[in-house]
Image 1 (tube, protein in one colour):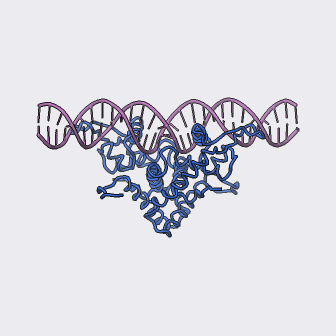
Image 2 (tube, helix red, strand yellow):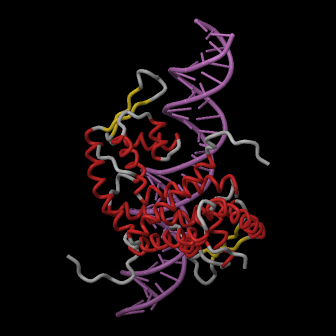
Image 3 (cartoon, protein in one colour):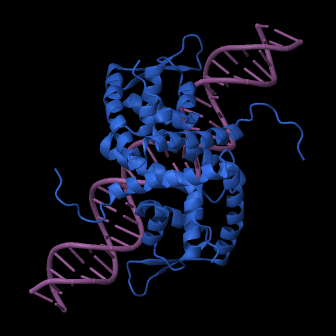
Length: 154
Length: 154
DNA sequence: GCGGATTAATCAGAGTACTGACTATTTCGG
DNA sequence: CCGAAATAGTCAGTACTCTGATTAATCCGC
């Protein structure tokens, strides 16, 4: 009997947390626009004219995934994609009016959903919740991209 | 400028946390066996002979996903699947020797990985981290399956 | 013991997410 | 200015994740 308790495995908890969120999003926010899609809309509201790669960086999606998400949003007429005249490798992204409207509508619903989602925690606990998750995620992302070249190691 | 700060959105944080975990798992634990696959192996070490649906329940995966995960583990010879003679709808699952060996090996590596992943938090913070995530996830899952029929509600 | 409801599993379809290989374009050293 | 390196984006392949529809087997009321 060498089984472990998955409740002490942060990866397992992270997955369960995300699943629970996905479910609530589906019922309280939108069945069409997903959470990552909303994140992309949001990034383009904040900084219109970003290129695809940078949007991915802002919302934490790799080049392949961001390409698919953007292609879906484009098909639904929520954003436009034009070649950068200054750099023919880039596509510049900008929300359509419909995209802006959709973002506005979902922003309200998302706020409501977050309240329900976090309701089991007191305001003080919510602050801790955000802070701890962020610290763990930031640190792990840091392991990925070693900013400074490491010195010799055995 | 109506953009929101995604750092205050638990869904976004959950996704980032999971991605960070995925990455670390890949480098520190296994490139072949994924974290959900390990969860299935673990469930079958704890309770050999479970059926597919129950395994899904234990690890938090729906019927479709668990079917695919199990089919992959079966293809790799890590588990066996036999019809329940008592109930012809069910498949009973049991790890092969190779499956048990793999679980044992990954258990060690997973423990190491969890230490690295949680290193940014003090032991006290780690406890809080687990507790808060679990409470939020449990509550959201509870919204999904109303255990007892609710009384009248306005 | 027949027939409808329930339950276990599969299948089709959509979306997210990664890696590795490739193409197109730009940048920069000589 | 030419060619190598770097960069943006695409494509193929794999895996996870959900929903809704379908199939097969069991359960249960009569």
